[in-house]
Length: 256
Ligand code: ADP
Ligand code: MG
Image (tube, rainbow, N blue to C red):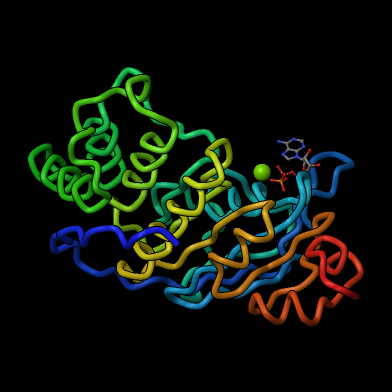
């Protein structure tokens, strides 16, 4: 165990009220590929659900559908009981952290956050700058405000990308393998930080990973996807102690 990090001053961020999410028999086919098959899953307000599955199991497709970047072939998606199908991403109160940062390479950290707030949230320039600075400070990276992505380490870039998602105060945050490419030590540090931030904000979150230890550490519940089907959802202990299918037992590595 390393020594606890010194307490960071937490500026008045304002809580959000996480929205309940219902995936209702969501299927998605790409030609003959059935990426998702009748996935039903309910996420409670403020809950963090880890979506765990091997590569190709449909994790990203499910997140993209939630964000409005893709639509299901059949099924419904509801936030707080209201169908989101057909609503474009900016009407959904969702923000997403992608696998590969997706920061604007030619913009500073501050500008990356400010642009998201101005375009995504319609804030004035001065309000956006104030909130962007507050968020960078909250993440302990105020000193990176003027740097472009190429001038940062991988971990710093990913903090900025997470800051950009949190700054919008969306009621749903979707993270798609947000730490792939970072070294093991940094992943552990960042995941503790991310979970703390999500909890302090109260946002509802879906956290995609193919790493079972990460899923178990991050999720209030873990949803295991295999071959486009929801194999099991439960607390980390339930998944580990009572795998519902052979697939889960094999993937999680617990005795069947
Ligand atoms: P994961 O994120 O778990 O690795 P994906 O959701 O990216 O899985 O992919 C699930 C399946 O759907 C894979 O077989 C993938 O090849 C297929 N797929 C995803 N997006 C598309 C697309 N736009 N066109 C065709 N096939 C796709
Ligand atoms: Mg993926």
